[in-house]
Picture (tube, rainbow, N blue to C red):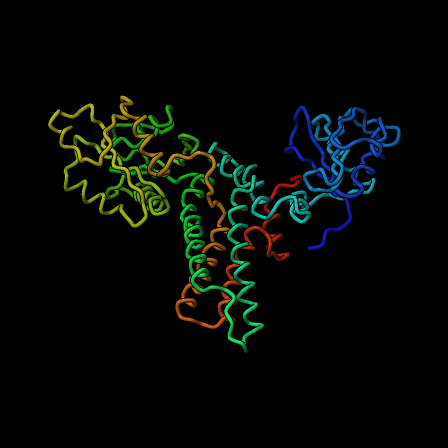
Length: 453
């Protein structure tokens, strides 16, 4: 994709009235265009990374007093000349200044075009550019840390190192093709095999990290399920520490799902309180039960709540058997332990977490269990986690190509086939960082950005 020589402009702060709004220009003529409308110092003669007070005027009409920040290429986000105009946050003022800048030679930026230019000018690789969008959208401490780690190049550095080693061997295998008639071997097959095995360990670890990475980025869908009157809504209220759900002693009060977000240690859990699982007594309750089962099928974590004073062992086992499925985390919560006799309390299943939702007993302990069900290890903020489905698919294709290389080495296939499979692995790794790109791929990625970033 070839960049135009035009200069783009957009509002960099959110739409809506605020104290301050920031308008960003980027391109070869950014400083010149800003200088046309700025009344103050001559911006074309000022140093990079300086701020200047003055006002923006359309002819003799002053629009606003502003501060203008200058970033001279290549010392800017896009590696182009960048100007940021800080003005008052009136929609009328912001729109008037942007229209004036467009009239003076700029054009309106497309979604993500500033970051696209940063990528195309070598300021960021593609995975770092995507991390910018993730950082903007971060809604928890953990998602912010993961995006920041990727923006700093943690993921990119790991992939670049793997790619460089594979490129070296690919070059040697290609060299063998030039001497095919002399039957020489430049790439040691044992070393190649070991490199592929080591690379696949790293790739495999990154693929496995997606489950946690995606949970951190999107939040963990967590269903609170159980029989009617087991205390599901009371437990939701206790976890949130507020009266969010209607609580009643009448079985079947909850007819529809209620969704709330609970943040535990920086991870967002999307708690879904559901209708009780039983044979419905009317059409409305039947719909509620159907929605409950649908939510359960979509969840990453199920908190199964039961009345420890009422349910039998056989009933409990039957309910768990209905809910369990491969890859699903299930927490067993024995509610109403404040009503249990000592013998009943001692007979609770070992895996059950005993709580009293009404009395808010052991709620903090349950929160710890919920957190550790989603996050098996303590996060330090330095982990390399895959959070992007595009990256996951590219890594899976890389793994498949490396498997073919491994099978080829063991099967003593010819150098041309080995070279082809190594090239495939390199291609898919390159798609992640942007070493290999297409216009369609870039359009798809950057069209999802907000305008002004």
